[in-house]
Length: 271
Image: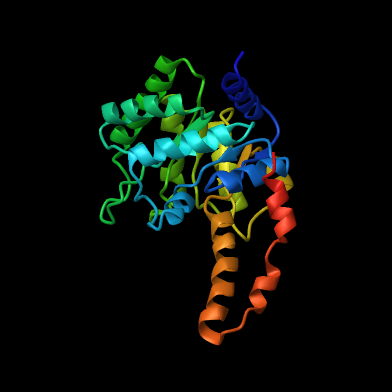
């Protein structure tokens, strides 16, 4: 069996029991460093990648996203899940075609969102959202790759924090063929537990930021997967901006002392 297939099987196994963290690198360097720390899987971040290109979130092209997935997946020896945004299309047929392309990049999983980018109607109507998930499922099945499909409901991120509506969507996405369910923005342990119970036995991904439950606490609720989205990228940008602002505003360089030693970071990339 080839290495890509091995990683895909491993990613499937990770979802079957226990709870694992897949942190979110934004480029090849950050991916390799995270893999070196012993994480068992990684996930790309649409925001972190966009910022690395000098753009805001959700402003990369399909071709750029596919190239990014290919580069990250090839850079490490552990499974990589792709933040595939909304599938880079509205129409289910087009979503399926794009997902099929993504399965050829070496990724082990990908996620599809139900947000529209329209402030007046921030979520796709449920029937359309379900058809988009169903199309992604069909594309993965046609590919024969076994890529894990995660369906995301974005209500808590786009100003529609309705738990019952979110659960209805996640249950519908599971019935449409999603392997894993994800509602980023949940904060309450009770809400997370309710989602886990509603879609059981399908695994649930939880997004955690600076303040949130520990891996052990989430595992006790039955959560299978924990990710951090763009938080690691934001932490890295904080260090960069703090040091750069000191130089720009005060003409001093003390902040540079907090950087990782040259030998440590350089040595991490030696092969």
